[in-house]
Image 1 (cartoon, rainbow, N blue to C red):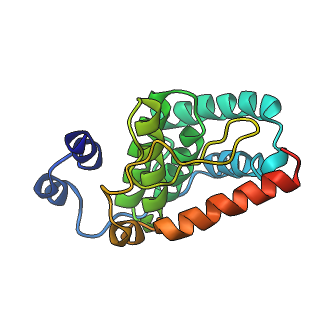
Image 2 (cartoon, rainbow, N blue to C red; image 1 turned 120 degrees about the vertical axis):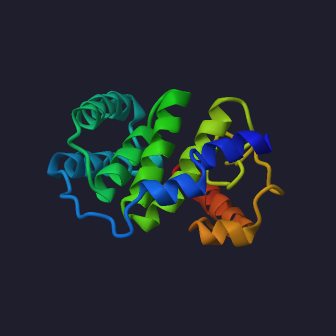
Length: 191
């Protein structure tokens, strides 16, 4: 398990990364279409417990198709572009979507988008859960009908709260409070 995580987080050795990246990252223009796709993706999630997933899922699929086309054409260049694309693929259906999202988040960080560390952790957690492994950061919450929210399966001992904080991930106490608040919100909505 540790080897899998290390391999996913460290695609290339640090020495090779240092040699491959310029000392000062070049400035890249942000792709307006990718920004619009991201804005639509996030807008579909504004309804909280009242999201109509039957309507959102086809739009998510269309956004992934268009984002992949932009990616393959070389139209995505900036840290913002890769950050936005990571969120689009985080809302995918398959393990490969989540692993691609993780890779896109790592590129976003390399292109100067330091706040992409959270989406990098979330995509790794979602990927791990999708392949039948425990998440390690605690970013993923799931809920079966008429059941409380859960983060399981979750290896709470592998990553310390100090490392979570360094990556912009709430500590376990804050995660517990969030889960309780989500339960209260869904009970209030009658879900």
